[in-house]
Amino acid sequence: MARLRPARTFRHIDSQSWARYSQKKPKKNYIRALPHTSLLIFKMGTQSDSYDATVTLNTEQDIQVRSNALEAARQQVHKYLEANLPMGYEFKVLVYPHQVIREHKMATGAGADRISQGMSHAFGKPTGVAARLRSGQPVFMIKTSKKNISHAKEAFRKASGKLSGSYRTKVA
Image 1: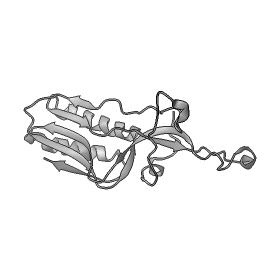
Image 2 (image 1 turned 90 degrees about the vertical axis):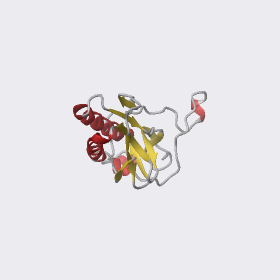
Image 3 (image 1 turned 30 degrees about the horizontal axis):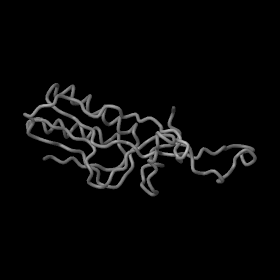
Image 4 (image 1 turned 60 degrees about the vertical axis):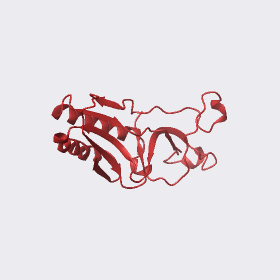
């Protein structure tokens, strides 16, 4: 399903959370059907105890990031690290997109006022999911050796271009 609206319409946290979905009683919920998430893989690379450096990508503001943006950033990081550090890193996605994004689709064009119901049923239908991030919260984490920190920083620089908002790389 194609995206209908740009990410800038959903990135600000200005309303209450809508993540309530019950599998036992779906008709009792506002959210009848939960949209699927684009983000399905959360751990990549090789797990090892010999890694001595941890690099994280942290947010600098409260923001809401869609699952397809997280997936694009994940693919960018994994592709860069596989090319430059094969078998020399462990990469994890630390957030899960559970926030349901709704959209109230309105009819537009000539005669739309006769077809549309206006704002009488304006709750909207679920169109996607997003992760709500707080300022300073880590989004991605790479464990690697100290000599490969520059590659991890470059991977996060490329990934932050796929995500809305501003991010900072932190080395521990």
